[in-house]
Image (cartoon, rainbow over all chains, first blue to last red; front, side):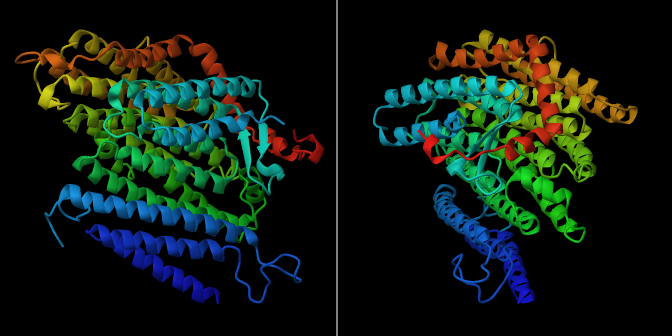
Length: 110
Length: 502
């Protein structure tokens, strides 16, 4: 299971990096979103993967590490807010600059 | 238990919220904002006084004992950074209140939210909490950078936001990696666990540490991660650029804090990287200072030069060098802010030429602005009797071997010489090689002059008060080098009994 999750995170991160290197703002934002998904999964996995453990402390012999779950919630909330902000900023830049190139010019367009 | 430590976080938060609610009259906004900044400075001075006695105060949020809960820690370094930030904020808010907060009505609340993030980052003793406060201050800084609108800001702002979001992702990976290896988030506790780490886990911890270096390097604008800085600072509005002078220093602060506390048992982790990166940053800054065509961009590259100089000090890795670096850190923050404000004033008196380094109409208040520019340049380059001189001399005295001297002395002296050449070219072009008539209606009032003059005066006072300040800095460096007191403070913590909470 560890290998599967690691591969999933790796594929997601590499897709994210590919998208972030694109020249248009929208793929870049998609890349950032994908990266934050990969990071959230990574944080979650850092509490070690286990199956069949109850989420509530005291209802079983063992329980999963609760801290990464709290961290991942925080990270999701922050990542969500940042994505919303950068979407608005990208729209604003599109209006101000007249195109959606990340450098704001059409030269060397892809 | 003293609740004073919370004030530097809560006061800006509530001020920001209050300013958002009562935002209809600008004079009320300005009054609240300035009063709050003054109160913040007073509280920070009080905290500095307490920290200067050498005690490390711990505040456990929610009364959860460390290492399980989030702690705020007030030591000398944190108190120093708090005071530095609040002095800067006071002058920036003062300047913004001179009608430089228009157009747009959200500059003041955003400044206070930024202050909340900065103060929190300086005070926290928990590495995930550090991430959260970084995000708080970054989100405010995104909005501040865009203050005033326009093409340049939209372009530079987009780059800044994307880069910092990628940086935040790296930060999260590094923090969770360190958590996965050590099972704790408290920085002091993490340091102890890393010292006793299973050798098999050590590479993971090292990876986490180096990833953190990349993140802090991005914030501090260390080469090769500095390309966002010149365009962002040059595009920002005057008060915002002045306030941003502290942002790169936050990166340096985080490096010093995290590597002295968490990676104290791995002293060789950063050193091979720091030396070359410091020199490259310094060189890149100098090239930029020469190549810049606008004054604002030139000042932005001066920030980069100061980052390179600071990194050199950190790379020397001795208490004396760290003390000198801390002095230089405070000096360069204030002087770069003064320069940004000054350039903003000069720009308004040059009509369409703005801040391009070309001969143009003479400035209405050419004499006074010229004198200010001269003093500011002398200080940023490091000529006596300004604080830059004291800072650089101390950095040069801190070399511990001939090899270090061979690198540090030429780096500092040549960079100083080149900077003064470039700045004197800008100064003569703008103030002396003038053509045409004065643009009359752009006279600046007394208040903005006081903001610049005050910061410059502080630079000179800071130099004459060099002796007590430097002895405080070396106490700070000593406290950082000896992390036992820090660990003791967190192990001695006693949760408050229920009956004691009043």
